[in-house]
Amino acid sequence: QNLYLVPKFNDPDTFFLLFERIADVRNWPDADRTTMLQCILTGKAQEPYSALSPSDCHDYAKVKSAMLKAYELVPEVY
Image 1 (tube, helix red, strand yellow):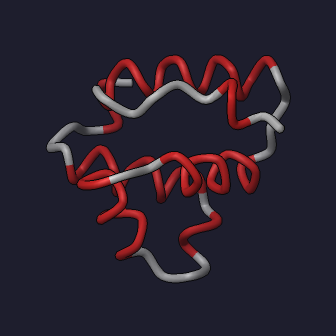
Image 2 (tube, one colour):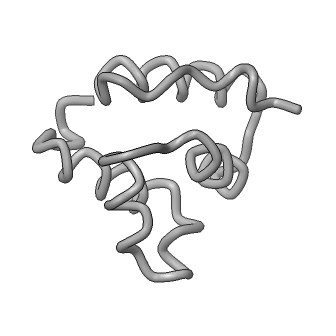
């Protein structure tokens, strides 16, 4: 029901900026954020997510960090 609000994943910088703004406004807990990411990721963006352990897949900070690392971006930029 909220998936239509999630932006398309093209550029990680723009994606996380928009995604987190929407998530904050909608008060999505981290568990929901990671579920939303899992539902919309395709191609290269799926690889870092699928490489995480089952418990890490529920930790939004770890998911975001893994994705940024895969695109050679560092969280400090955000």
